[in-house]
Amino acid sequence: MDISMLSNKIPTFSYDMSDNEQYKFQMESLEQKIHYLEIKLKRTEEERNSVVNENEDLQNLLFTARESKGQCESKLLETKRDLFKLNDEIQRLDSLCISNSEAIHSIHDKLHDLYPLKSLLGQIREESSMVKEELHLLKCRYDATTKLELHTQEQLYESRLIHLESVLEEMKQGESQFLRLAEETNVLKDQVDYLRELSVNTMKTETEKDSFKNLPVKIYENRVLENELRNQFASLCHSFSNLRGFSSMERDMLLAATSSPEVEDILPFQSPLPTSAPITHEIVEPLKEIPHKDSSFNDMDNESGSGYLLVHGKIKINNIHRKNNGTTTTTTTGSNSMFRPITLQSLKQDKVNLLADIITKIWIVF
Image 1 (tube, helix red, strand yellow):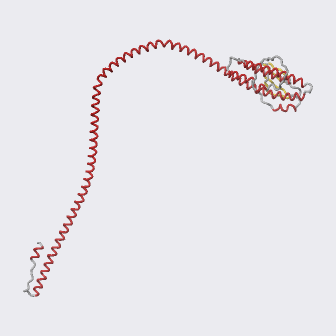
Image 2: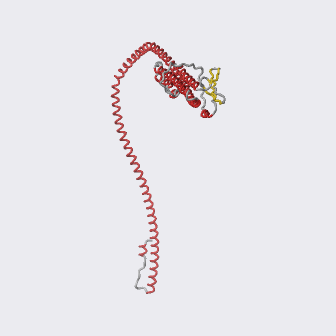
Image 3: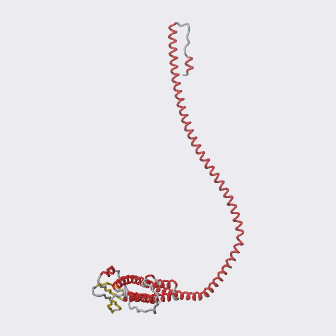
């Protein structure tokens, strides 16, 4: 029932009724009106609730519509991007197709030009085959003509190689000889030093024991012997300077070996006296080892008598024995031995033998 219909059915007041009746009637009408208003309120509330529910449904639909719209817009953007990419790719392929078509047209034009080149290439191949045959014939002729020359050159080089090997072998032998000579020279230098020290000590003892009357005679004899030895060295050096069969390096080595200060120190005195012809001596056995210096030579002046020197070869000194009754020296040549006293003359003879040994070993090389 509608509200308008209810409002129409409300009774109207009449002034003819009594007051109580009117009051009751008004109360009933008011209660009825309240009842209708309550019904109307409930209906309006129900309508409001239905409208609110519809509004919520519409809002949900609007939210879902908005979400779907955002998704559709993102998909639309992606499709637009893909569309732009496809458009660019189509343009690129179009330009590439145009360029390829132009290249195809140019290649087609070139192919028309290659037909005369093929015939020219066939002619060139025929000419190249003919040239190869001629070249092969020329190579055969060249090999035949050069074999003899190569054979002769090979023989010549082999002969030269054999000659050079022989020369190299001779040079190696000469080098070994020079090395051996240098070793022997060092040994002789050490022996010369030892003999020089021994001669100085012996001369000291001799000068202390001998009288002043005999001293000038011994010095004169010593100087004469030294001058003779110096003349021998000078003649030997002069002969070395005139050598022609050796190189300059070998000649310098020999001259250095003969003119070394150790060899010159054998002759400590200078004398202007005239000298006689050079004295030659035969070397029986070369020296083999050098004795060690003995400090007992320094005490030789304080003891009575002289020492015994055991000598192997010409000048080798191995040991010293001291005795009170005389002085003797053992000198061994080969298998024979003899005893002689140590004097200034014996030391001079040892110097002469040492110098002759050096000269002989140097001349053996030649």
